[in-house]
Length: 155
Image 1: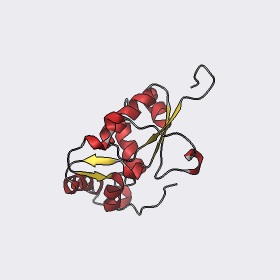
Image 2: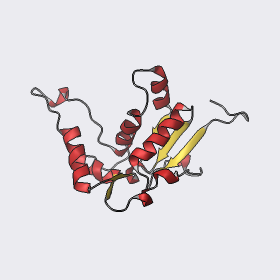
Image 3: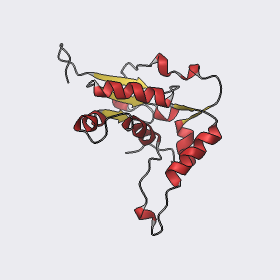
């Protein structure tokens, strides 16, 4: 989609130090409004709560579903920070509708900052800032590492 001046409606969001659920809801609203959203530093997005409980809940969700036959038949669950965040945003978009699928296609999530976005201005949302948290939180990269992510950049 284009603005009146002919420029694309694109935004680059810095995910470092942002609360995952709040950031995901803001990103979902932008996607439904027609914006292209690039989220950088996905490994630095934080999840609120006791770190052990957060990791345990993700571990039961990701690793808990097993098949009696083979690992090939298990549901594929996200383990990387990019996919964990994208999965959270996907849960906030309309299910089984073309509008939701088109919105999700406009989302790009990156670990770190890719070269093509290095010179761009990053946006931060104060309502999603982790400084609101009074105590316990864990970064998404740490959760992903405990789920089996090797820490590299996904292609």
